[in-house]
Length: 368
Image (cartoon, rainbow, N blue to C red; front, top):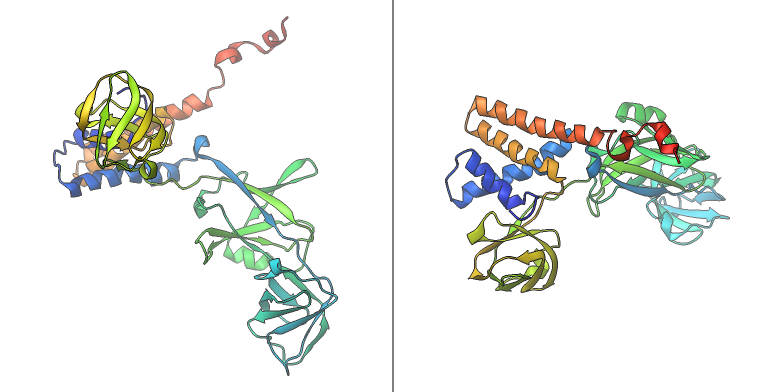
């Protein structure tokens, strides 16, 4: 292997060899691909909050709006709201509306600066006449690759205030309903996760209380990984000493990315990283291919987005799942121990504080 990474295909093949699975049936190979991906996408990320996996994002909580008053004439319409001295905007569509003297929380739809509609219909038995109100947005979508149980806590959700970072308090449903309020405050204090939205199925978060001025909220999380795949359509040819690979019947543009691993299948352990894709039938490697290969079968495989030192844990994890399937208790225990050992060694490596110039004593750093 010309690279230190373990491509997806190599992990699958090594796992099958390790557990003595000699079948070439498509269904069997799919089973081992699934096992490798289960360890890669779910088992390891769910158990460990690796620093290299962390991502950060932010959202902005919009300021609540309560300028002017509202009137609802139920003899005319129970959904039409008329504002007095209001300047409503299209951005307020979807906001929640609380009208003083009425316990219902409505969803507001903008029509103009002084008109709108509410859902459900107004529940009051008498007109709302020049009533005070509040419009606020408390629910926001998370990053597209966020999964609800992968927020890194601490820091969780936080904002910058007076030169410091202030964390918000997470609440579960029972506590949420005890503290949720429509009374506005200068800053948010609590949050909870609230399912997925209906437009793009992103996870949502709710904040309370409504705030008087817009505030940026930041957060760190473990993003969801996408299962690894491989590409084998068509054939490829290489030239000795050249970093260019020529394909026939291929579509590299839509199926290959820089960082993927390439091999000619006749040299099954000889992998090279893809530097760039030129067009549908041409790609460039990060180093020259050493020999000429005529048009033949090839494999381009994704590489785990893990440090090299941790990629072996995927292999041992897949072997662990396979040993369970084979009802081999001793092998199950052994592979579990090996996978844990790789993770522990990686964690020791990343937690070391004495390396490089840090071996020097503090006083040595100030010597001239």
